[in-house]
Image (tube, rainbow, N blue to C red; front, side, top):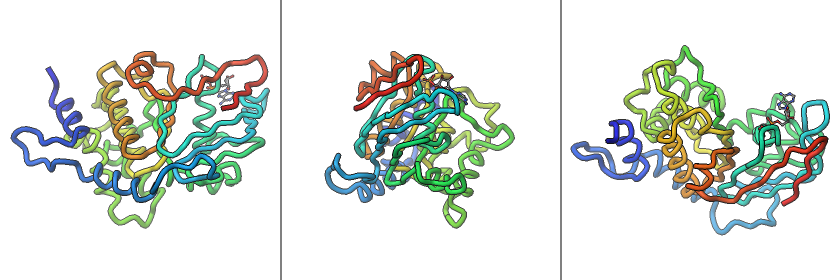
Length: 274
Ligand code: ADP
């Protein structure tokens, strides 16, 4: 028996009316996300365009944390609108690759192009450029415990876009999209793990990113919550967002098949070309 939350969630995803309510046929944010992404992405994807909107390219990347590099001469190309899993054993570099794309780990050498941004060229004070354009969901949710769900979505949005006038309504719409309208004024500590991760997804998509990154987003939630999160990612991908997700969740990989980029842990260096 589905809970009211689950009903709201699945209803929002399918864009259907909930019985006995006056919900619009498709949530406003979904419509706007779809329209924005369609407009931005335009025509067919072109694998040869360097830095095309929504695309990701790593060329000859060397990166790590100061010791032996995690990646050496690493190459990867992801087309706009692709759904890609990063798969490999613990320590293979999945999180590092997500951090490289999000700009929190810097390439020592090579190019990192994400949604047209040359991330490898940005200085630390310019990293907001990535935050404004790319969404990221982490395994541990990373919500601020003393802020409500709404404030957790709103604050980063306002920090990234100080002049945005409708930030509050965008944040509320994102929470509605993930099925948490009724919980938006609650603190994270009162929410289940799955609900907290949905807040984190709302935070990642509130600014309508063309690229969504996710690092083991289903790692801390039960199978029902995993399915809900994956359905949302699938929906965002169908609307045109590029999704890159690190996972070792066999249920997710078999239930939501997509291109897999295998990463292997190697003694000293990792060198994967695609
Ligand atoms: P995965 O996500 O596949 O488990 P990681 O990207 O977390 O792999 O780790 C890749 C390698 O980088 C591992 O050898 C790990 O020990 C190292 N590493 C990860 N994070 C850090 C860090 N903050 N400082 C130093 N080394 C790190």
